Length: 366
Image (cartoon, rainbow, N blue to C red; front, side):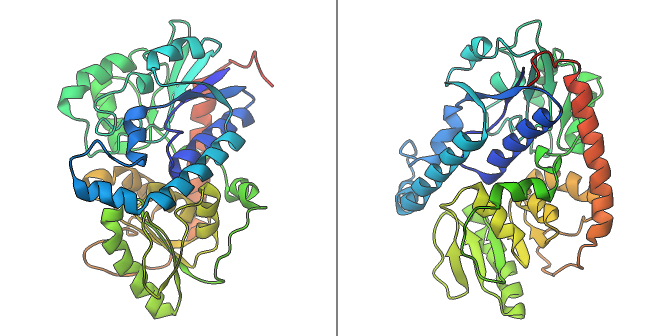
């Protein structure tokens, strides 16, 4: 049995799809696996009305967007129940030791589980500190999502990773830094969502119904503070091409260009909206990933100190100029024939890493 621990309870398209993709790839390789249902309460409270803050504007904003947020939660709970094989749930990471006792191998990743800003330091659950001595420990593509690991956490991370048999991350910059910290080899692999091709995701949405225009621009705005940047780019392209805008944003936009907000729907709507778009504008790593999966023209926005995930992916695929920069421009079209040659090779390398990392632990094979 393989046990996976990652961010999976979050109401976030990328989180939901990356854990599903990793679960299914491990099953494709012949292993039985389950997702350890650890509910990280500190992070999840940001999906509710943030009564804990003293900022009245934040509370009023959450109240204003409550209806959309509530509908979104319901959609994600349905997705999780339908597609993930979950263990017993716990909010106490210490209990994961008992919950995972039947697992030969524990895999942490992907997503930003090693982002010490999100987890208030290296979180014991996501560095597998609950593991027994006879369990094999593997990381698959966790993300630090920072320009560098803060100095104060390096010693703790080094100690935690000593117990791992195989370590991989999502950013080349992080791989280099961890090699320097630990003195051990660290692989840079693809996000789990890229271990499958587009047809794999088409199976998720083949019966999914979502009314969309024949042609449109899609804005995926994960962080509403970035909305103005995304709108400027999308509106330029929409007006140049006489197209409406479909969007994902916590609050509704009242403008004739903007026809539909899909915020309240689950991951299937996210996939549909990207698959059928003429052009995608986003501030999300996974929106960029699925734009690539579906061979879409797109632009991504990321702050300089948190764009290492996209930098690594774009360099690997030769599309470095597809960021939204201050000197606004629409880049040349992507040559997806060339991109896919590189992607297929990277996919093969990443699957090979995963196969070797899991090793001969198929005694409970389905």
